[in-house]
Image (cartoon, rainbow, N blue to C red; front, top):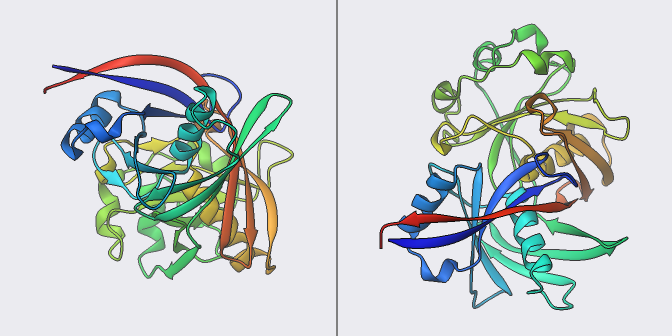
Amino acid sequence: MKQIEVYRYDAFSKKTGMGNPAGIVLNGDELTEEEMQEIAYKVGFNETVFLLTSICADYQCRFFTPGQEVPLCGHGTIAMLSALKTNGLLMDKSVIMVETKAGILRLEVSTDNGEAFISMEQAPAKFETFSGSKLEVADSMGISEEEIDERFPIVYGSTGSWTLLVPIKELKSFERMVPKNERFPSLLEKYPRASFHPFCLETYHEEAMMHGRHFSSFYSGIEEDSVTGTASGAMGAYFTKYIDDRSEIKMTIEQGQEMGKDGLLQVEVLNKRDVKITGTAVYVETFLIEIDG
């Protein structure tokens, strides 16, 4: 049996038990892809991140849900850089290039009052039309079709991972949502492995401009993600394209409140498609996972 050391960091929060947990494994070069998937399944978080060497960047990161590998994970990347920072592995570097399956990303580390903030450039925002049934989309989230905000389109959006962005009229609808993830693949004909990301312009926090929930891909092995960096980036770009026509914006986005995992992150959009998210992560614990080998 192999024992693998896993660090837990909670991203997009300053408090343990809030935000979005990620498992961090620093010795990814020693593991096979099958072992990474087994570890992620046993860890059980929405994503576990594995650090590897890279020939074209400072580091390489691979991201696994309990059920599949994904090309990019925003909160996992923030958590990984926080782990490197708090373990003294970044030295004095403030700009780090990270290789992912979504491309090579530029990250910046800054400190304010002793607290580390990680800014992450995402892949350029992309959108594609959704031609499916609004009624079925609403029903798959446990709400009525009338609760969808028809002022804005339902679209596929991506800054590294595809999600279905669904505008909702009122914040109160989010408390009633109960996802039927098993229905997602048949509804998402163009991207059957995509997730659902309903959002609205009403918020719990006064400083936030948008609120969201994130219902995970049926194939991910999890039902819901508490605070989602990639989808939040796509949501910010959606705002500049479909809601308030402007080339750039800085905003705060909230997520996780319905799960008791209050989270906030900053999203900056330039030229309607260039997206950067900024957040923090807090160390929670270190534990061991046993795998065959």
